[in-house]
Length: 323
Image: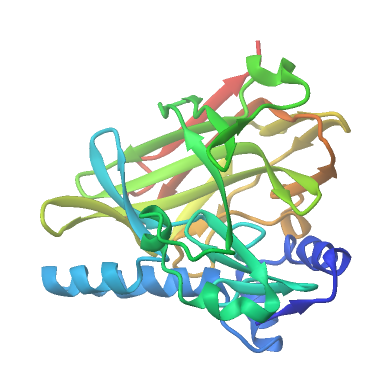
């Protein structure tokens, strides 16, 4: 597991990793000598992809309960990562552990636990189900960092609120409430789905807040285990802006208007998600740091995405302009 001397070293590492692509993140984890939480959650999805019987599926869901879960969307069941990749999961090892100063931290699903370093064994004994059933040992601090999805409709805002320990955190300046911070849409065939998200979100790390603007496309396929389920799968994913010689994605920030032209991107190898990083393509995820923090929001977005399974004839498309 990685040990940071202090919060400052932790922040600097996080800032560096935020610009790494998947292969660079893997090389970094090898250089520090462990498998990251992100990598372990992807391994769980890979094993599910190869499951051929209901009993095998049940065993995998139990064995990887800290990494994958089942959620409902519009009445259908989706197998997903328990927590999406974020600033914490990039530095945590496969057990979700990392250390800052004299405090040990552990990621379990959408929860972050911490305790004094000398009591780290207590963290290792906790499972995600223990948190859900209020069986966490005394002395462990538990915080929940999650975005609560209130609605999700094609070309409509996926309204989100930030929650810490089940308490809704309101922004310092709530004027952004009239603006869209997240757009989401999808398209599907009988057994394949493609999702397209445009996001302006904020997430805390330590004493600062990171504001992120980015776009991503991801794929699901239908599987039949005790009924119908949708699960992430690796495939060829395409993402492109749809305006000619114009800015496909425009974000309004306290640091000025940020505009991005988005050319046609395609995964170099089959993947679960396509989310091009800023240093390579000139746009998201782009991050700004501030505390207590102003807000950012989407000014316009014109993009579409498709996969090998849906073909280019079936695509998810967003066309949005702030009135």
